[in-house]
Image (cartoon, rainbow, N blue to C red):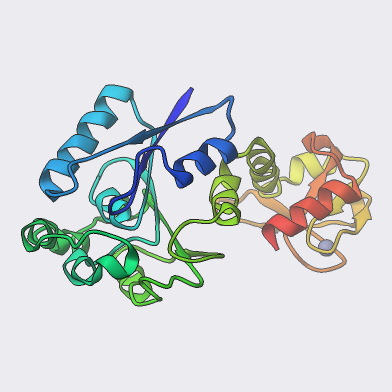
Length: 263
Ligand SMILES: [Zn+2]
C-alpha cells in the first residue's frame, strides 16, 4: 500500500474536507491517505514534524494546499503535489483575519515563514521534477498572483476548477493520474512509440488521434533518434498508432478514451 500525506492550510484540520475528498478519489486499494496536524506557529518546527511523519509512516507522496502547499514545496526529496500554494506567507498571512473567519496570524509566526521563502528560488531540476502544481481558476484569496513566479521557480502548472478551498471536482482531477484507468492508458500511450515490430505483427491498427482503423500495411514508419521506428497514421499523419498485437483493444471505445486523454 502506498501512502499519501495531506498537509492542510492555515487553521485547517488534519482530517477536514480536502482530506476526505482525497480518501474518496485516490484508488483505495492502492493508496492510504493520512492527514497530519503541525505546529502552525513555527515554520521550522512544522517542517520538522512533516519530515518525521514521512520517515515514520513511509510516505510516498505529499499533498499540501494553501499554507500547507508552502510547507509541501519546502519538503524536498519526495514526490509532492501543491494546490493553491500560499507562495509568500509573509505577504498573505497578515491579510488573514476575522474577515475570512480566521484568527489573525501573529507577526512572530509570519516571520518564521518569511525566513524560508528564499529557498523556493533554489530548487535543482531534479527537485522541480518532483513537484506538480495545481492552481484554481477562481481563487478568491490568492487570485493568480503566484502563478508566474511558480513557473519561474518550479515549472508549469495545471488549472483546476473552483476557488481557494479545494472542491470535489478539483480533487477528482488531481487524483485522476493515479487511477488504474489512467495508468493503463499511459502504458498504451508508451506502446505507441517505437512500435514497428508490434504493428507489423498486428491484423488491425487504430489511431487514437483520428480514430481510424486500418491494416498494418497502411501505416508508415519514422525513425527515432535511437534508430527504432514509430508507426504513423496514414489518415492524420500522427504518431498515435496502436496495433492489436500490442495487447490493447483496438475498439472505438478505447481509441476515443485515449483521444480524450492525450489530444
Ligand atoms: Zn490518425
